[in-house]
Image (cartoon, rainbow, N blue to C red):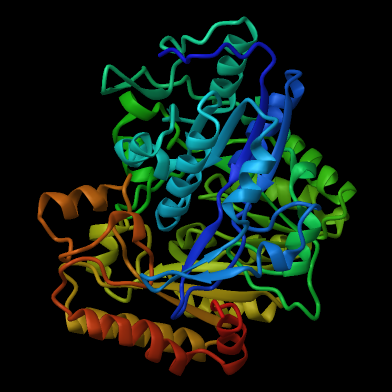
Length: 504
């Protein structure tokens, strides 16, 4: 692949695009995901000029009224949130390379809009995309004008691209872990080498994020804070990958297609000492609440306990975002699985205040079929786990999914019933979502193979709140469950808090 212009001293702008949300029940939140901060950290320590721009919230040159609270209704029932294109182009003007994160399928249209505008305004700039959604919809984003799409973890890839540019070259065909167009065809290079020792990663560039803006908005990804009492928060990860491979998760295909993605789905770790170093850096930035984004925080329990023990003296508040795999919350005692009370007590001593439990379904068949059997509803006493967590002062949320293609009415009702029992046991909140075949998952390929998408579905608009596939249960029933039944079992304070985030 060759560009028409040589860029010898590349300046990088790493960007989150504006966002859009369903005007009926989409909770408007900034993204602020970690991937860009790792890339920025790698570029920084290798001597490259780099900045981060979150187009959803803007930077110090724009008020939040001009960015995050600028909500524009679209004709399709969505609401656009963030900077206008004119201002985005103005911010991008002095940079040579624009890297854009595309993790979430629901943001496809906004990424396309941003890429197209940049290519029209600045045909000489190099546009790079990364993230599971970017690599899962290569053709769509190349059609929008992207030059390179990273297909694996990109900390080393971005430096290799930068070094090629610095040498006065613009041939990236030998860079591993990328896709590009050549003679009208999409070409993919061999996967990038997977980093096994995560201590070798650069420190994430949290200092480049608009942290104060995030704190003022008080709507972190994966949690909800009160604007009357907002926390100074940031996200972090202590590991990558997962021991499970649920079909609706991108890790399912990452593990199956290592010849394309490398071994990025494999569970890998930072040492406890590296994690402690990162936590100290966050404290220096003024962070008081850390949201841990690991896909499997407790995948190696002895290591996790060591980390939690080291964190006791930091006096940080902690919460998990992606959900603690519940099997790890139990231990074998006298031949029986029981709640691992020692683990919970250690987590509380480290500062944990909020946990998400991915129950997924009240049907064991559904769990075994779609969630790799990661939970046994008979052997794992979730009610006892909830009660113990509440006894220790932890807020607990549960995640429940509906709308599998072969899910029966009885199985759906079993999920509703188990969620109600968990609320009665002390669960603070129950999250109801419609299971969705996002590109990059095994579930997506299953839906394509069996022609299960509903007519007229735009893949770029898939989200957890809209039915998208043919199911035994009518779509209207599923929508009723995740809106009205959800309201029936959750407390009014939580309902009001989430409703306050729906686009106005």
